[in-house]
Amino acid sequence: MLNFKNKKEIFEYITNKFQKESDILLIRGSSAYNSIKNFSDIDIEIYSKKLQKPYYEIVSFKEKPILISAYFNRYISGKVVKKPNNIKILHGKFNNKIKPDFKRDTYTDKQKIKRECQLVTDFFFKYLRTKDKTYLNAIQKRIK
Image 1 (cartoon, rainbow, N blue to C red):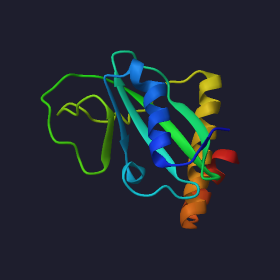
Image 2 (spheres, one colour; image 1 turned 90 degrees about the vertical axis):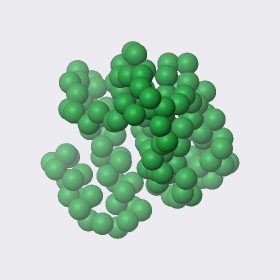
Image 3 (tube, helix red, strand yellow; image 1 turned 180 degrees about the vertical axis):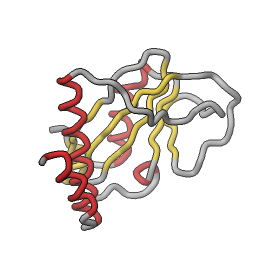
C-alpha cells in the first residue's frame, strides 16, 4: 500500500497517474481543501474524450487509510468560469460544461463486484468517521 506524508504528495500522485488521459482533472468535496482524516475519501473527477470505468485505490496517509475514487466523465469544452469552492483543479481549466454524470453505468460481472466493494468500503469509511449508523444500513443491504 502506498504511504504519503502530506496532502501535496497525494495530489502529485493523483496528477501523475491521471493527467495524461485527462483534459480536466479535479478533486470535488471536503478533501479538496480540508484536512485529511482517518478513513477519508478523495473523490476525483476526470474529464476526457475517452471514458473509462471508475478507479479505486486504498492508500495510507500518515498511517491512516484513505480511499481514492476516480470517476471518468466525457469532456465537453466550454467557457472558462470560476470553479465552485469545493473543487480543486489539479490539471486543466474549469468551464461551464463541467458537471459530474451520476447516471447509472453498465458494468460487467467483474466490474460490478469491484463497484460493490468500493461502495461498501466508502460507506464503512463514512461510518468510521461519523458513527452514523445509516451507513451501516447501506452496507447491510449490499452484503445480505
